[in-house]
Length: 151
Image (tube, rainbow, N blue to C red):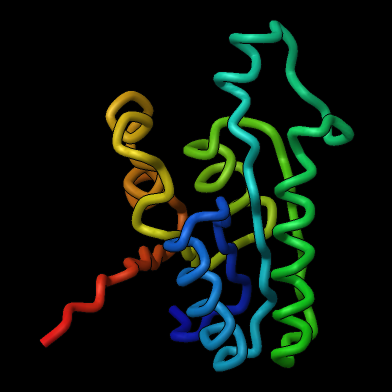
């Protein structure tokens, strides 16, 4: 068993928690001289219910993820990380992150925010981070954004 992480997968969804997860991933990646893999999953469950078709990577619904991850990639490169991969993919985030892409990139660490969903989505769909923790083939770091309290 190694105590270093060599292939890190970071789940990005545009939330503040995902931003914190990304920031922590920069330091962990540099400290371990690892490959940084960033993933944005376009949740197709609701999309297919409305349009009756699975979107493809050229559809407008993917643009936000492409822009977001390209900005994060530039930030990671500027921070001195030389090996950064980005993935903007369709599917169910629960399955795509912890099962498909964790295996594809041979991740030994997944980093995600504690909660990127609003309360209603969380109730109906469940917590993506909770699913990642319970079904991941590797270590998982769940990052929380703690509210600053005034003293």
